[in-house]
Image (cartoon, rainbow, N blue to C red; front, side, top):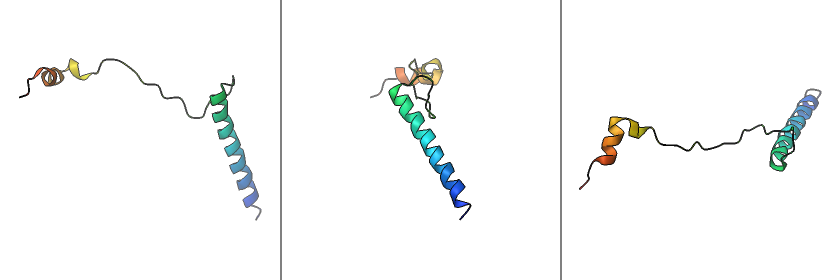
Length: 63
């Protein structure tokens, strides 16, 4: 029974920290960042046209 109390306190503290960080990210509170970083797409040209195989696939006529 004595081991259950520290584990429960640790679990509750971890949940509060994670949820607080997520709420902080949503509300844009300065100084509080999310545990999970935001995903951002990188937009640019694909790498396949640089290779010969990529160019051949795009320029070949299909019947």
